[in-house]
Amino acid sequence: MGNYTLTLPLASPVDNGKARERLEALQVSHPAAVVYRAIQTRPEAEVHEVVRRIRAGANAETIARQLSTADPLLQVQLEPETRYRYQFLYSPLMPSYLQTPSNPFIHSLIHEWNENDHAGNVSVPRLSESEERYKAQYLRPVHAASIVDHRMDEVVPSKWTTVNADDSLMRTFIRAYFLQEYDWFTFFHKDYFLDDMLAGSNTFCSPLLVNAILAVGCHFQNYLAQLAEFWNPNSLGYKFLAEAKRLWAVEESGERSLTTLQATLIINTYRKHVRYR
Image (cartoon, rainbow, N blue to C red):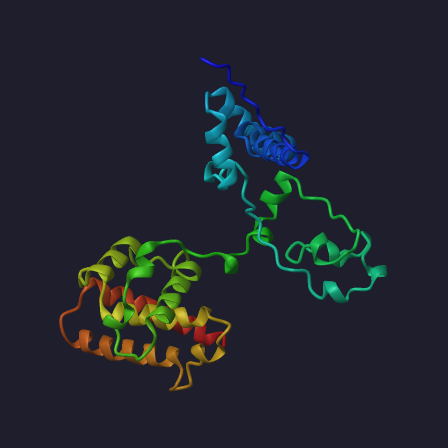
């Protein structure tokens, strides 16, 4: 047999350049490289979490995938901001000579100065932990709070009143009542009331009680002043109270129940709100 000679074509400079680019791209996208860059560039808290996972035996592919998809487990390691802050008033319009630490308005607790509000260089020191506890009424104002209870999202107030109003708005009144009024005058059990309101039971919930609560809840919606105008027949506060009085007269002349007494006490607190207006 004859001898055969295999001749391989020489790689051109263009091919060498493409191969080098592919190699560099592979090195950049390699999971180990992604993890290494994360340790170099990520915040300290996330770096500690990545290192902890490496020591726990997680492979580079898993960690790289979690880093690229914003792993929730890394996010929960961050401490949430529990303080409530309003944007500082007129900060874009404030002249530079007022942006000084000696300006007492910059140290306001509720309208705390934020360096992101303006390009100023004013630095306001953070309160200590003991100061935050002592001044919690300013850092966590009640009117900025919200009650988290899935039952308040599921109840249908329109089933308990003849007043024509949006269910979402009436749920807002109920939330306002429990947030602003209930802790001061606990005339009924909140859980029993919400459970029966959701289930349609009349044991711990009744149309009279619901209308009384809605009438009081209107007084805590300051963004709509007409709601609490007790003298205005077109206001919802007036309508809920009128409906509660009608139902109270019916129950007063018939068989009374626990909810009748509870609603009567709530109507008396309504008079308290009216007296101060």
